[in-house]
Image (cartoon, rainbow, N blue to C red; front, top):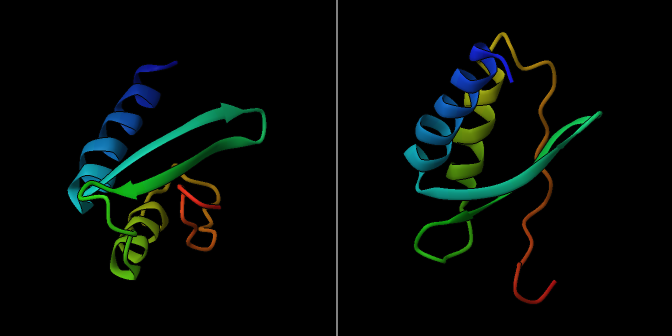
Length: 77
């Protein structure tokens, strides 16, 4: 990964994910990066957290496309 790519992921994790009280995991593919996020305090991610992540991604010139799926219960779905 390039130095720019490393910096993006570092900023994504610290500012966007951890900065909004979330943890995430995911994988990269030829189609992009797919991840799931969950609240640090083990509650369901609230709408404000989802909106904050989408706002952060939308503000980045190096993000071509971003979308957010519906909430799911990771334990039971």
